[in-house]
Image (tube, rainbow, N blue to C red):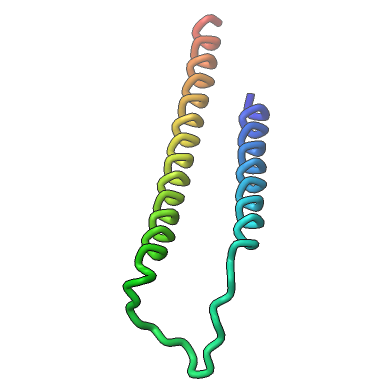
Length: 96
């Protein structure tokens, strides 16, 4: 039974890794390098770019919430599986 649980976890990790690699590979084509400036980096508030900034911020926060939700669901799933296994073993030991 431990092998099955380990196999399921390994498949979940492999799937998550492949998914994240695919997302990163897709995102690399969309990134444009910032314009080169001779003076160096200049930081200033530009109200015209606020819409784009908020969109990037919201995308990042949604991603964080999704990843946190996935982690919580995996932990709950593992807890449930281990509880079921422990109950089966306890029932098996009580019958003997």
